[in-house]
Amino acid sequence: MGAEQKYTMVNIEEGFADKMDELDPSVKIRMAHKMVEIARDYDAIPNDTFHAIMVTVNDMDDFPCFLKLVVYKDEDAPLSFMDIEEVHVDDYLDYLNENK
Image 1 (cartoon, rainbow, N blue to C red):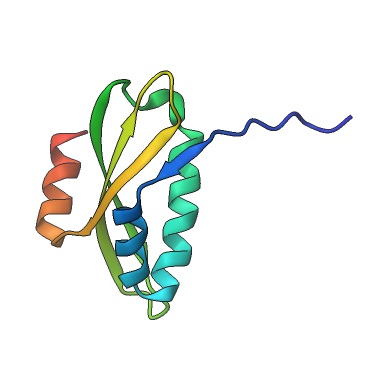
Image 2: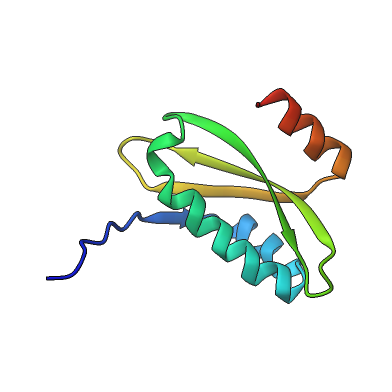
């Protein structure tokens, strides 16, 4: 018998999907991989709160794109990806320093 797989349901809000459509195609693909990683870390996300997650992905030219994701997790509902926005590198670095 193979290894047991754990699936986590997610909800992607329409506004999030619309903003994802505006991203460079190579960034979208890499962002989808980041979203899977976030969903796998479901238990680490606090319940009943909006939570900002900063990520960086590189485009096809290896240029970094810094993004802030807003997710919401309710213990009785799937993880919701609520918003995504591009952020300046300084904001990204500030976030990392504050959340060591």
